[in-house]
Amino acid sequence: MKERRPAIGPRLESPRLLELRAKYEAFDDPRTAHALWTDSYIAGDLDLGAFRDDNVYVWQGRDGNAASSYLLTAYYYMSIDRRELLERMQEDGAFGAQTTMLNDERLLSRDLLDSVGEIAFLDDILGIEPPWV
Image (cartoon, helix red, strand yellow):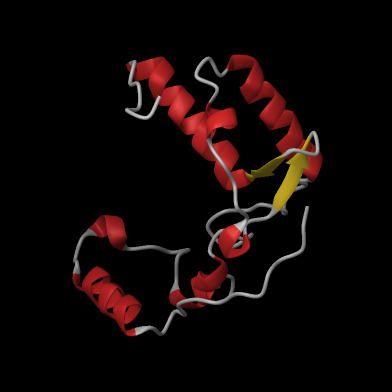
């Protein structure tokens, strides 16, 4: 996996994010009462300038997720992906996405692989063909 890039972007204290947080906290519903997703838990492991990097929401390098896992997932998707989504979609590595190369020609990330898998699943189960396909 490639090294993390320095983060440049919004921080948790930006005015717009503070506004959204206030609206979220004002929404009184039991489904928004979290034991885990506290401000300190999120702030300790989230850099919005690198929101596609390994963080509290998406683990990319933890739990033994290595470049080999990404490659095996890509090969699996290529074997089942009748729409060739992996070939059509591009990864740029922006916002801290951890990437690895497939066959020295295609940049892969967890984000890209998740997108391919999710679109393929929806197409398979619901028969939804995205307009760009």
